[in-house]
Length: 150
Image (cartoon, rainbow, N blue to C red; front, side, top):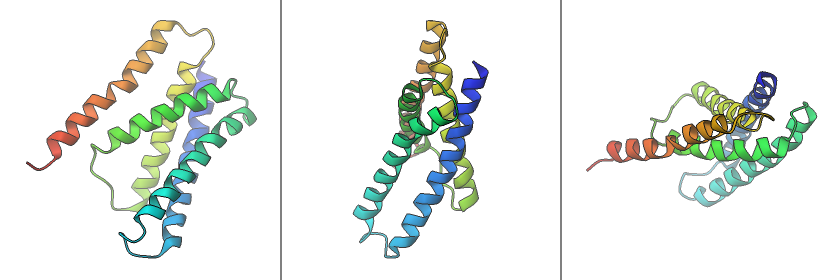
């Protein structure tokens, strides 16, 4: 169980760093002001993210994580929840904290997905993992609401 979780977390941490570097290169390559590039920038972010999440199943299979597709799908949902939770946190202005944050978010998502898809895992642990991840959603929404100016 720990091997599967650790391998998927490690793969996702590496994917997170690669994703971050790819996003930074894409944004730097657009070299225009903020507002004129909003639509192409968001489109590039979505396409790059979708490609990384789709490729994650293949990468997981190559490193020996069984049921890579299930792990990848659960990790994608976990990443979406972590991204929403990240909206509640102040953004970093330096690039290295962003890289560490991306790697950590991907690693947590991969680890949680690897754990939740472990064969023979008791249903209560799967539910507890799912509820733990989903509990971040209302907490993040509350934090965003409390942080918003009145």
